[in-house]
Amino acid sequence: MNHHDAAEVRARNRARLRRGMYLLPSLFTAGNIGAGYFSVTQTLAAITGDAAQHLDWAAIAILFAIPFDSLDGRIARMTNTASDFGKELDSLADVITFGVAPSLLAFIWGFHFLPQSVNPSLRQHLVQAGAFICFLFLLSGASRLARFNISHDAQPRNPGRPGRKYFVGMPIPAAAGLVAATVHFFYAYPVESWWVAVGWLILVAVCTFLMVSTWRFWSGKEINFSRRHPFQLPVLLAVVLWIILRYSNVVLFLAALAYMFSGIWARAAYGWSRRRRRRPVPELPASTTPDHESLGPHFTG
Picture (cartoon, one colour):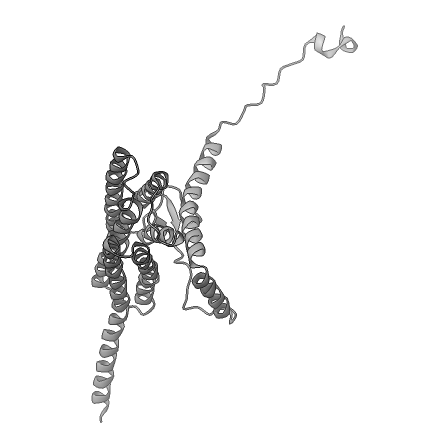
């Protein structure tokens, strides 16, 4: 084999490797779509079957999809295989898994199973309001994704530290994760009290607003997995993973709530600091020449 043939073989091998590397992030995106589809089917099955079991599986599927969504983009950037096709496919996957699936789950779990013993008028208003807010959740999530795709170096209204990267608005996977983590926290037993349904309505509405807001949320993109890390890190990650799996109901719910309130707190702290900077500084009284009376008898003529 001459030098030219060897170079051609290497070029074909590199091209074949590149095709495989382009396929790798798409596989994670496909897993994301599969989890969303499974969640939707489980939510629908809850209407006529064992509601708690099916709804819990639906919530867990959404929570499982979040790592898939994080990994496909990171793998594409680390392997230099990012493409417009992958970007669009990822957005469509997010609409299904973090838009359609959690909005349907939020409605069925929070409002569909309200008992007939609840005041009929109140029940009807709660179901209608729940359907509307869950639709707004889906619409806001899709709008959030569209804004993310067309924004280049978007800056939040409350800028953070110069060296850190932030999301503008609550990312849709985090909002969907909070919905799923809440359902999982209550072991997916459907809501049967009107006051719990009202609280659920408020929580979903807050998530809806935060997605279309321009407030900053930590992105975690400054974490570089390609750099060297202490050898103790895998052990620490294993311990954290065990805690999450063992106490998933509590840990995931608290983590999702903490992330949501981190954005609210960052916006509130920024507003307080701006008002403090705008507060006028009191002027010192102008100096006056003392008269004879203030100088006392020692200085009188």
